Image 1: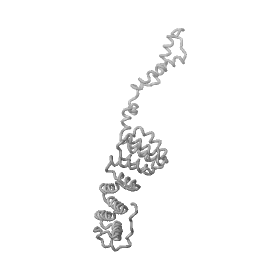
Image 2 (image 1 turned 180 degrees about the vertical axis):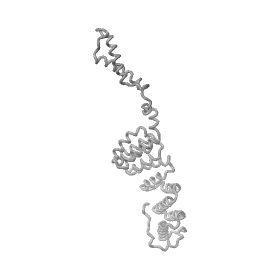
Image 3 (image 1 turned 135 degrees about the vertical axis):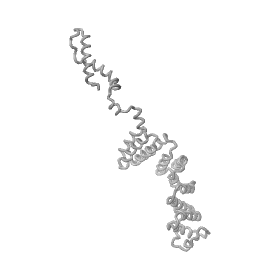
Image 4 (image 1 turned 90 degrees about the vertical axis):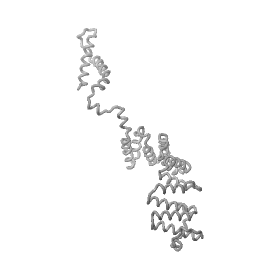
Length: 295
């Protein structure tokens, strides 16, 4: 292995001899140390790049990957997830400022990862920076314009900020690009509760039922029945509860709800063949009127 100190010493000796040959006082006159070392240093620095490129030991060279391999490594999905895992851990511990600092450092290499923008938005929200929380998701959509999760998360912020129209626009876009995401329909139902003329709720309940399996499917059937009752469609609500009982036979909560609805229909003299359970007509104690209650 070449010793850089030996090279510098040799250069100093060479510079001294060279400087002496050029001296007006003859070749054997010793030059000043400063002048000789200055010339040696200039030569040494000019050769530094060459030395580093060809004389660095193999072990050191291998420990410092080139920029291309570094960029490739940083762009690997596993490394991205590991970086975000550290930031997420800080977030979970409540160390929001530390998480934000780390996310800002990671940002250049995570621009196309939706969870980066969602996590950054969540950090801003915890720091009571609602404008920056929404701006984070909006910026993310510039890099990922067809990402349903970013539209969904932004709709939640806009709903909380009492901007239902903008929230609905985001939800419609989210459903357009991710039609099989149940959360989109859940959120759209939630936003539409404020709308005096709901447009999508029955469709959204049907979609949730289709996308789910028991017991979630039964839960959405019951919620659809409650919504129909609230809309004054009590007979249709009973029909939906009968469907729920096929998936959950003997479920006491569903049976009790059906009895209440059937009692309400009887009281209003509305014939309902779906109310074939005689207890539904006799159990006045369960005959609470649920109309007017928003599910």
